[in-house]
Structure formats: C-alpha cells, structure tokens
Amino acid sequence: MSGVDEDAGYAKGRARRALIVRTAFEAFSAHGYRGASLVQIAADCGVSRAGLVHYFPTKESLLEAVLEERDRVDSEQFFAGVTSPIDGLDLLSRFARLVEHNTSNRGIVSLFAVLSVEASDPSHPAHAYFATRYENLRRHLRAAIADLDARGLLRPGVVVEGLEAELIATADGLQVQWLIAPDSIDMAAGFRRRLAELVAVEVA
Amino acid sequence: MSGVDEDAGYAKGRARRALIVRTAFEAFSAHGYRGASLVQIAADCGVSRAGLVHYFPTKESLLEAVLEERDRVDSEQFFAGVTSPIDGLDLLSRFARLVEHNTSNRGIVSLFAVLSVEASDPSHPAHAYFATRYENLRRHLRAAIADLDARGLLRPGVVVEGLEAELIATADGLQVQWLIAPDSIDMAAGFRRRLAELVAVEVA
Image 1 (tube, chains in turn brown, yellow):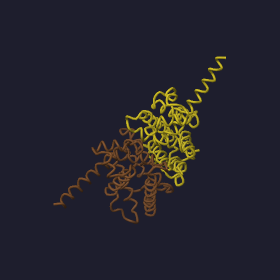
Image 2: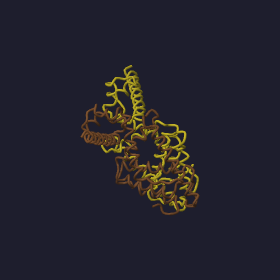
Image 3: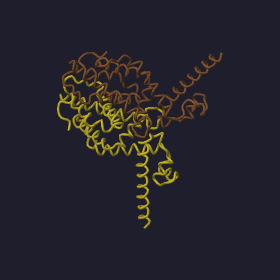
Image 4: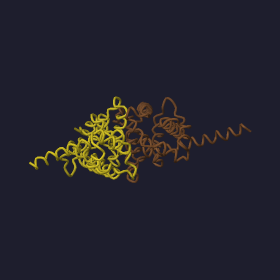
C-alpha cells in the first residue's frame, strides 16, 4: 500500500510543480522576469511561499524551468526529426510554421519578446540562455541557407551574408508590431512573403 | 533684482528637471518602466521623493517626459527637413543613418526595445504612444516605398505589400540580437544590406 501512496503523492507533486511553472510562465510573460513577484505567483497557484520554495528554491530556478518547458514543447512540435546535414527547405518550412503557430499563442510570443530584451543585460540570469539560443538559431539557419544555395534554390541576387540574422530579426520584429497591433499585422504572412522572395520554390 | 533671482531659480529648476529625465531614461532602459523604482530615481538624482513629485506628479508623467525628449532628439538629428510628399530615397537614407547612430547608443536602443514590448499590454501607460509610433513609422515608410516604386527605383521582383512593416521589423529585430551579442551582430550593415537588395540605386 505504501507504494500506491507514494505514487499518488508523487503524481500530486508533479501536478503542483507543473501548475507553478504554468503560472510563472504567465507572470513572466506579462511582467518580465524582474517585474514578476514570487509571492503573487505562489498566491495564484494556491500554495504558500514556503510551498513554492520547496519546488523552486530560487526565482532563477523557476525561470530556468519555464524556459526548459518552452524549449521542450517547441522542439517536440516543430523541430522533431530535423536531420543532419540540414535540409534547408525543411528547416525554413518549420520556421514558417512556428511563426504561424505563434499567432494563436500570444503568451509565448510575449514571454520570449520580454525576456530576450530584458536578458540583453549581461547580469540577467537568462543572459547566457538567450545568447546561446540566438547563436544556435543563427547557426542552423546559416546551414539551411548554405544548403539552399548549394542546391540552386535561392533566387538570383540573394545575398547570403548575414541573412540568417536578418531572417530571425524579421520574425522577432514582426512579433513586436503584432503584439502591439494584432489586428493590423499579419506576421505569418509577412514572414512567408520574405521567404518567397528568397527561395525559388514554394516553402511548405 | 527679483527678476534675476527668478531667472536663476528657473534655470536651476530646468537643470534639475533635465537631470531627472536623464536619470529616469537610464532606469527605464535598464529595468523597464514597471521594474524601475521612483525612489531609486530620486536617490540617483540627489532629490527627495517629494522633490521628484514636484516636477513629475506621477510615474506616468515621467515616462511621458522621457519619450518626448527622445522623440525631440531623434526628430532634430534625423528627421529635420523631411518634406511632403516624401522622397523615398531620402527617408530610407535617414532611417539607415539612425540605425547606424544607434550602434553607439545602447541606452536608447535598450529603452525602446524594453518599453515597446512591455507596452504591448493594452493597460501599459505607453501603449497608445507605441501603437501610434509604429502606425506613423509604417505610414511614412509606405509613402517612401510608393515613391521609389513610382520612380522605378525598386529592384525587379520586390513585393511592396507589407514591406514597410518588414523593414521596421528588420531594424527592431537586429537591435535585439545586437543588444545580446554586440560583437557578433553588425546591425547597421545588416540593415543596409537589406536596403541594397530592395533599392536599385545606392542609399546614402
């Protein structure tokens, strides 16, 4: 019987941990990491401050859990089965679908927009996370663009130098305008228009 | 004599007001509007909280003053003498020079990046400011692109639909990557590369 009780306790603990991560996600996305209050997050979950500290001893550890969870979901939904060497057409198509998916996920867009800017300060606990995230994104896109170039799939006159940073910038910047004026800005269409200018075949 | 005293008092008041605006600019740019503390801003200026309230009765009024000051400086330095109807080549060239100028003004870039994302929340006091700012930017760029199009200065195959939002996004998004990794990202060169792809003549 003790095994069953332990399992039930374990499941309850996992559910509570997941609830705290979801609530923190919403708080960070609305107020930024520095603006969010641990006391408020605990209250919104219906746990005490001590209860929260049991799962996440520091605010930093909670931020880490939120970012890990987002990466896990994105990886499963959009980047599962990415092969190496990278297929450029496949990667751009995954990127375009992620931007489309984000149009119905304002919270995620806001979280990354707020945190990435806040974390540009080198003393911010997510600074290394975002520096690495952008480096990896640029590296993968550079490989995708080189693959398209090698296969003759880029339109004539496309300059590949710096294009990986520019494509990420286009998606990030359209997200900011979309967050401010969701009815005026179609970020998914805007991003696809840019891809269509670059790539000679259709990006699915 | 009383006139002289009043002038001296007035000059001192103006200098103190300007100091508060500069200090608030730095605090908002480092911590965002919501994260910045009025008590800390007052302390950094060497005035009491009551002294600060004498100049700026609310945190909102201080934010307004900071944004007005930034607009004034940008307008004087980069948009003085813009004629109507808009000369597209002239406007893009001013935009490119502003991005270049920003590479030595991390504080300004950070201020606008932090506030624009924070202000995407409709309840934020700068929401209307940023909504209007982006609308105006898009309108001016649309006019600039239409002018270039009419003069036959756009490269063949350039799609003008949504291009105004995309150009702003490129500049905004490159700024985020540059804030995080200033040594890896040349945002001025990246922006100029994009302009060179669009415009058939050199953008000064």
